Image (cartoon, rainbow, N blue to C red; front, side, top):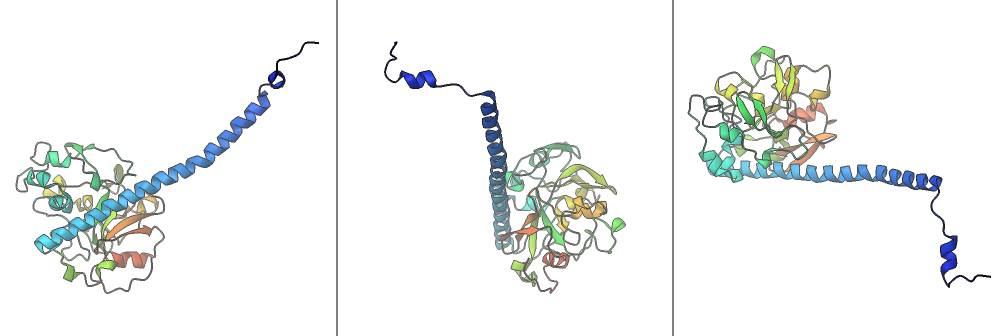
Length: 308
């Protein structure tokens, strides 16, 4: 009888996985991966949302610094030269050199050959939500590398259209007495926010989609400056929106294009973030009561704001 070396019996009796066992192991691994991926995606989205919140927080600080320096918040846009609030606060977000490169008085300042084209093509991370799905740069309005924006100022709680032509309420972005903080040629001061800075939206998230077109309206949102505003072709929605229209109107099939253009929507599930006049940032659910939501867009409406 042949004797095996010590310890070799276990080796002799060891066998490989059967096909069934291998398939079971693969199935278990697949289940574990399927369970893990949503958690990983959720963690990534939480990190992006936190970064987005920080962007808005920094914009709120910049707005306060602008007010401290000049005595008012910036205009939502300047109709005579097409500059937006996002251009006016450049020195407050450490973009002084870019601000100094702007020519606010040139005839075609925002055109493809104008002096401000480079600024419109400059990516500023603080103006872009990390979850934003749009391209970093787009060829639009003659500016080959125009950079989309994720954040727009809050101009009104009643305006439902960019111009008088499509307004149902009679309130639109060309109105000179809008209720928000950032509207055309505005110069709102802290003292003008009689509803309280903790109860008034200043900047909100928006979903950029330059390919969208409904009722001759586009969901194209940009920063720095606009050749269309400069040439009195409205398009104020490039810089601002309104709480007069429901949040996330892009998902409401029966909503007209004027509403969708002015609506606030984020790239985060369930709602959008807003920077309030006190500089704080709140995540607001799409299911917020519409009356409350409208009231938050007004600086001086006298409404009582409850929990939201």
